Length: 174
Length: 174
DNA sequence: TTCGTTATGTTATAATATAACATTATTTTA
DNA sequence: TAAAATAATGTTATATTATAACATAACGAA
Image 1 (cartoon, each protein chain N blue to C red):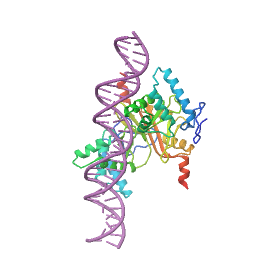
Image 2: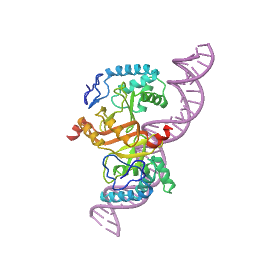
Image 3: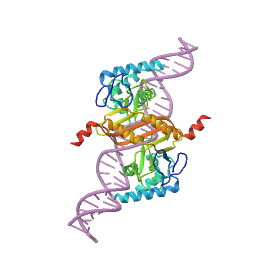
Image 4: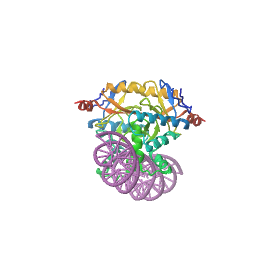
């Protein structure tokens, strides 16, 4: 079970109502990479060194990261890289559901549950930047149904809630 | 009552479950401007010529428009303008709830209901760009409640659903 | 009418993202 | 295996979106 505030995200996270998954601790990066490897293998896609490296960087980040931050890190690692290097890798990872992109602040974060494709709700703290991917009781399904009533077929749902996280609100109140 | 597909948006739109408001027809631009004037007056804010002109341009647009498109139109109108000219006016209009910004495609559109501040759901057609502001049964309230369970206080909800609109889907099927 | 405040003008630049084409690596097919 | 086809990456240039910083102008209050 994974919970807000906890830094954990376990495989058995039920993914049912009201669960939340924060960014992975560094021990868990390996598992995400393994999952990605398996998933690409299953789909007959090439999980190249570059793509793996970019996913690792995104996973290791404490918070959602910008593309140019990833670019800097790639360069620091000794690799020759330009913007397209990063964006192409990110596009691949996005298509495969391995990372999410936050439109409200142009950042990227690792998907907590690449195995089961899903649309998620993101809680983005405007103060500290901390971001949670939460899976709340059927909000996405409800949106899909309601869009259906307008004869609208959703391809992608971007649901990003900006506000104060628990910790920042407490600090703020004092 | 306003409905998807109809090009109308009336004052008595109940704004209750399952209503949708498309972009205003050009006859209705005047009403939106009047509402904005009244609203700024009530709030003791200056609805300057520039701000009014930018709101008019946004209202008149058939679809959500980019900032640099507005900039071009300002220049065509004979006014001297640079990026900050547009962005400052847009910031004002955003703060006052007179326009919305779509994060998924960096565009701006007139708020259909400036009188009653609200978070809305947007249906954005990936094919033709047509965009509807819809007010669906309590999705936003539900999001707020659920965020509350994570002790998260929403300041802004960005809910943007990308997909195929009714018309494009029909064309697509043939 | 002067002063303080707010809005706008103006120049420069930051931040995010893509186009286009060359090169390299991998996979497929003969 | 060699050649051809495909896919990925390298590289340069540039497009797009947005803001910083400071000068000037307009407005509102005293």
